[in-house]
Length: 68
Image (cartoon, rainbow, N blue to C red):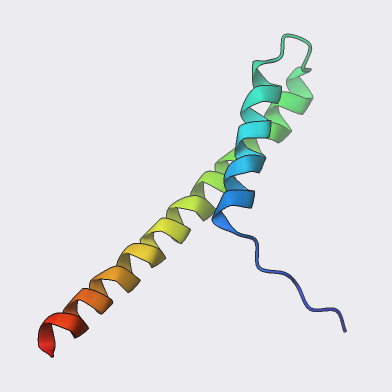
């Protein structure tokens, strides 16, 4: 069974940049634009989760450091 690779924040952000560039293209069809928008919205949610998780880890580290 193949292991899935965890996607990094940078990879997610890069893909979102690609989507934005594609959506800005005057030649993108409405159908493709809708698919790209949907993918982009999912990526934004993943990026927000990624940042929230990082923020929570930092808060816990600070609390641990202050408690010592």
